[in-house]
Length: 164
Image (tube, rainbow, N blue to C red):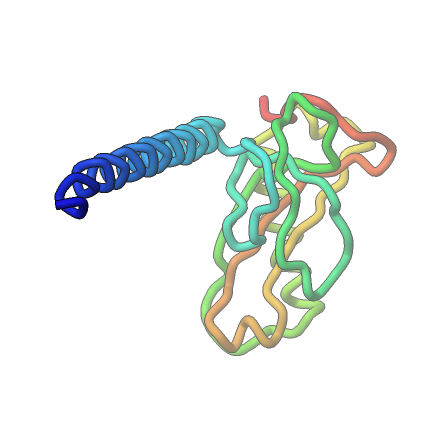
């Protein structure tokens, strides 16, 4: 008889624990969902480190450096001071690896042409330099042909977009 009397409180306690845990799960899911929604709503310059292959036109970036093993760049809102702005992304033609010099020449020519369309008002600004990320010989053999063009100003960190 004692066991029959202790059963309802144990069951009620179990339901209470289940209810609290269920509530916590719902709150956590709502917080995670809101964070994802807000992160996605920030547009191309929403923040955080982005892999080089996932950069998009309009991203404003920091931590630019000459490197063969660049895996990603911090992306921030263009309204904040930044080192560069992604203004073009294109693919080089398929074929055998053209060599560093030829690949650089092709990337530079196309980046300049793309910059003329993206930011014609910045063409006369002699402080703006073009920086590009290009495939390494190793990534080329894996099918990587992507070039990402970035406009920089080595004299200062700019705010706002160059687009215009």
